[in-house]
Length: 250
Image (cartoon, rainbow, N blue to C red):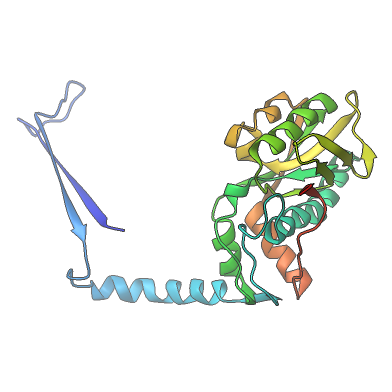
C-alpha cells in the first residue's frame, strides 16, 4: 500500500486575519512515503519504546488451537464462525441478564465480519485483532417472532455461513425448512426474542434489515474484539467444530 503525505499551502493577499478573511490561493501536492526517505532518528527514538510495548502486548499467548480454522471450511456453518457466536453467547448473556433480568436467545453475526483465519498453534492478542479488526460492540435486539422469520429467510436466501448460536435451522434440498428451533423450542410469531449481534448489523448492515424492526435495543458497552480476548484467556485450548446448528440436506 502506498502512503502519502498531503501538504496544503494557503496563500493570502494580505497577512491580516479578520472576519472577512478568504484565501486567495490553495495549493496541494502529494509526497509518497517510501523507504528512500531517511528516518528521523529523534522520532524513531521517541517511538521505539511504545512500539516495543505494543508488540509485546500483541504477542501475548492467550490460548492454543490444535487445527486450522477458516471461514471457508463449510457452506452453512463453520468452526470459526461457531467459535465467535458461542463466545458472544457465553460472555454476553451474563452481562445482559444482570442489566435486564432477561436472557439472550440467539446470536447472529456476519460471515464477512470474520477478517482472518486462525492458524494451528498459539492464539495471541494479535489473533483477536486480525480476526476482528473493527471497533464493533455487542448489542442485543428485542425482536418479535415475525422478525425472526425474516431473519431465517435471510439466512436461507444468502446461503452463507453467518455465525449463529442458539438456533437450530435444518433445510431440505429445495431450501424448505425441515426444522427451526430457538433455544430448543419451536419459533412463536408472537414471542419476543433477544438476539445478540453487533452495532453495524443492528443498523441494517449487510442488508440485515430485520434488525431495524427491533422493539428495543441494549448496548453492552463491550467490543467484540475485547470479548474474544477475554474468551481466549478463559479457554486455554480452543476446539470449535462444525455442527448441526445450520445445515441443508444433501
